[in-house]
Image 1 (cartoon, rainbow, N blue to C red):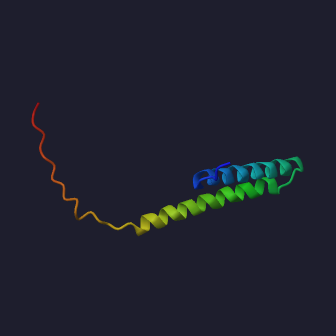
Image 2: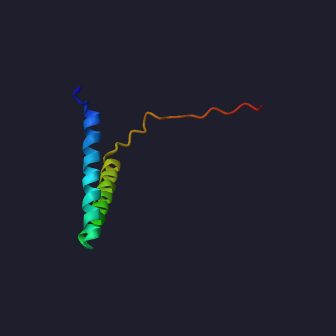
Image 3: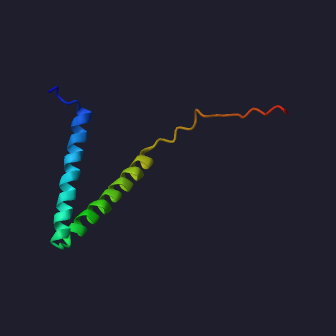
Amino acid sequence: MAPMDRTRLTGLILMIAAAFQALWFLLGVRRRSYAAVAVPAAAITLSAAVLLFWIGWTTYELEDDLEGLNFVPEPLDDI
């Protein structure tokens, strides 16, 4: 068996993590556990917060480099 490249290894790790998370969720639902709903909901909420923070940080750090974009539109010829 040939060694896996990085992309395939990442995909395999994601699939294993997703399967584990689904199994954990289903076992919690079967036991009627509040954590089965609360933990994934908290993970989704925190993921959204981190994503929004990252977008905000990236937007904040953008340099306003519009000086080189002096565009003078040319008039359109009548058709």
